[in-house]
Image (cartoon, one colour):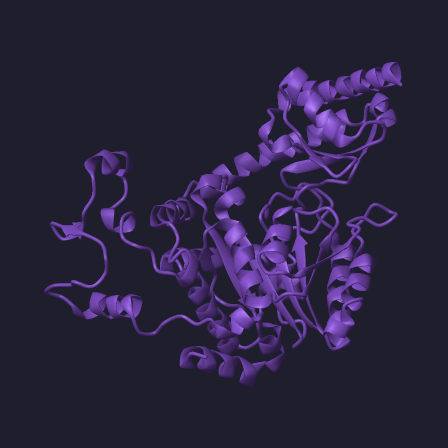
Length: 437
């Protein structure tokens, strides 16, 4: 094992040996090189005032070389903020501003200890880093039955972890905290579990209320108090889009520092929060009570980044930083929130129509981009194909009975027509089924 990895592991063991036991084999072996191109270039950047012939970029007239056909479209930005490599951990100013935003929006984080956010190549990359650092083959990864399909690829296919699902909703159609607790304790013999919590949920657009959130924390604590080492990840991809009767902040703040056997990790980003999906700017933040552990995990994360993508997009980070520092940011963000909330409320109003009750129920939704129909008479895939082929309408079929509708990308005035077409398609498929039977 590399001495740098051994040094990081030693720090983690000394401060919290439970977190060391959470690490995967890769997580224990990874480190960020202190010597080599990155570190030598950083040193040269401070001291090489005459000539700096270290890092692999090109300079011209003492600024990064560039093509005017590109720079002319980006003239508001200095070449130094666009063309050079961004640091592996991300643009320092962006990390600082994102942390300030996170602390401002999360009262539960006050008086808690957490790391500085590290920039990732959006949310998928952040989840992938968690998998690399903490998941070995056979390790249980726990998340609800209604989930983002990429979890299976990231934890299961890439890392060989065992997926453990539980029903998202209980009989009262609220978050199934008891099911989460049972799923965690069912893995007690393994001594370790990774729990992924995604609110607002994809695909259902559901976020728990305050009471259910308390029960979620207690479920995590039950596993920790039973001696399990628990990595709990809040996938906050749709953070901030809380429309009604739910908690209004990430569970990360409530889970941070709750028990020595629990490591809370927040994965979030500008991707969906700020409607910049193609920019691919996300963040990963750790919450250990020990600053030394947080620093060691940052170093290991930088090692994963260095070994995979080297660093994220510098222009995208600059664009996001510029937006966050703009005096118009909050107002424009509120305007988009109001549009999204209007669409969600319009869907709820449409779904009150009694005629729909014979063909579908819908899962509770109060946040995010999506809602999900639970079909009663037609299988979801048949309906998806019929909508596409006959009405040029795209939806997502999930399992046998669930159809996901992204109201986020439908104008409010078009939503009623959308659901009428879905209803009409069900009627047509039902008639066809009767005719051919």
